[in-house]
Amino acid sequence: MAVRLFEGEDHAAAYLQYRVAPLELISRIMGYMEKKTTNQFNLAVDVGCGSGQGTVLLAPYFTNVVGTDISPAQLKMAKAQSNPPNVSYRECPAEELSFASCEVDLLSAMTAAHWFNHQKFLLEADRVLRPGGCLALLSYTMDFELEYGDISNKLNDICKEFYAALLPLRDPHIGTNSMKIYSDMFESCSYPDKEWVECLRVKRTMPLNRYIGMVETFSTYQKLLQKDPTEAKRLSNDIRNKLLSAMKTSSDPEVTVVVKYCYWLARKP
Image (cartoon, rainbow, N blue to C red; front, side, top):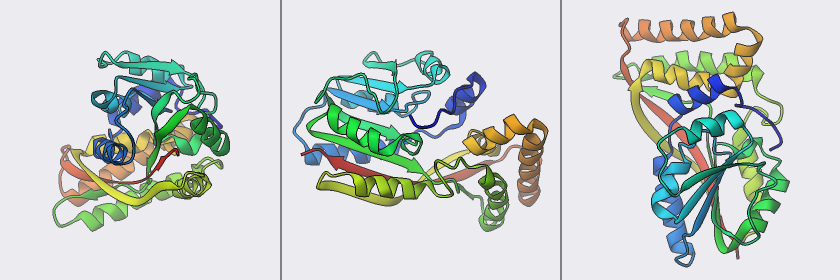
C-alpha cells in the first residue's frame, strides 16, 4: 500500500464494530461475474480487507476466499471473528500480493484502493488474475446522509458541519474527493470489458450513536483524535447533541443512514 493507516488496535476494533458491510454490492459483483466469465469460482482475494466485513460476504460464492491487509491489528481482529471455513487471511501489500500469476478468479478492494499505489496495484491485479477473472473496486463517499421523519434535511445540515470540520484533515494522497481516484483508476484499466457505476445508495437503520461511531472510524477523525483528543471528542459530542436537539429527544433514536457507493468492475481478457 502507498499509505499505512487503520493500524491501531482500538481503531481496528471500531472499524469492525461500526463499518457497514456492503452486502448489496456483493450481489452486483457476483451478477457481473456470472454474466461475464466462465463458471470458475475457485479463489477470491479481498485486498485491504481490514477486519473482514466484506471478505466473509464472498464466502458463499467461492471455494476459497483470502483477505489481505498490511495492518496486523486489522488482521488480528478479522481472524478473531467466527469466519466461514473457506476464509483465511494474509499479511501482504496490495502491490505485492502473495499469489501465483493467473491464480485469482476475483480480486476485490472494498473502500481500500484509494490508499494503494494505484498503477502498481493495477499491474499486480493483472498479474494475479486469470484470463476471464474479474476486478472489483468499490468505495463510499464521505457524505453519509440521515433519514428521520420530516426533519432529514435539518439533520443533514448538521452532518455537513461534521464532515466540513474533518475535511482539512484528509490525507493529501486522496485529496478532497476520493471518487476521482476511482474514476482515474477506471480510465487507467486497460481491459476493454469494464463498467463504472457512479452511485448506489445503500440504506441501514441503526442507532444514532452507531452513525457517530462510523464517522469516528474515518481516517480524518482518527487523525484529529491523535492530534487533539479533547477537540475530537468535543466535536463528536457537539454534533450528537445538535442532532438530538433537532430530533427533540435525549435517547439514542433509530435513524436510517444512507451510504453512497461508487464502484467499477472489469474482466481480464
